[in-house]
Length: 252
Ligand code: PEP
Image (cartoon, rainbow, N blue to C red; front, top):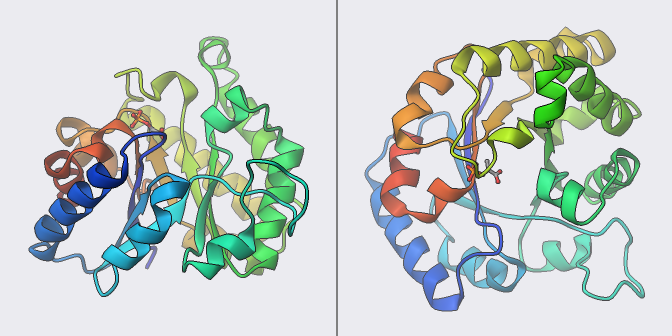
C-alpha cells in the first residue's frame, strides 16, 4: 500500500521561538490522531532544523530540509551539504520547489544532480515539479510536467524510487489561494504515474507516493485527497498553523 504523506514546507518563516511553539502545538494535536499509514513531515528553515530534530524525537513527526547543495563540500558560500544534514539527523530534503526554480534559477539539470546527491547519501527526496499559468492556459501542462520529469528523473534506476516522493505543485496554485480542482490534480497525478510506469515499470509507478501542493487548506484537503492518485499534500501557508495543519492531516 502506498504511504500517505502530509508534508509542511515552512519556507522562510518562523524564528527560534516560533519554531518551538509550532512544534509544541503540533506534537500535542498529533498525539491524538490515529496516523496509521500516514507520514507527517515538517520542513523548517536550516537554522531551526537541528532543534526541530531534537524536539520531535520519539514523536511521529519527521523533519526535512527545504534544499541542499549537490557537492560534498567546498567553496559554496551559503550552501548546505548532505553530510551536514545527516550529521544532525535530517534524511529527507525537498528538491526542486518552484520557488527554488524561479528565484534561484534551479534548472532541471541541476535538480537531476541534486537528486543524485540525495540518493548517493542514502537520503530521501521530495521532488517537486509543476507547470506555470501560461503553460496551463495553453494546455501544455502535461507536456511541461512530462519534460520536467524526463530531464530530472529519467537517468535514475527503478530502485531509486524507494527514496523518492513526488510532489505535483502547479506554480499558479502556490501561495495564490487558487487550488487545482480535484479533477485537475487527479488528471496530472494519473499522468505522472503513467509516465513513471512506462519508464520504470508498473511496480515503481504503483508504489511511489505523489503529493499535491498548491493552496491546500482544511476546506479543500479532503476532496483533493479523495482522488485515487493523490497520496497526500505538500503544504505551504496552512502548515504554519497548528489547527490548519492538523485538520489537513485528519483529512487524509
Ligand atoms: C508550497 O510552497 O509548496 C505550497 C504548496 O504553498 P501553499 O500551500 O501556500 O500554496
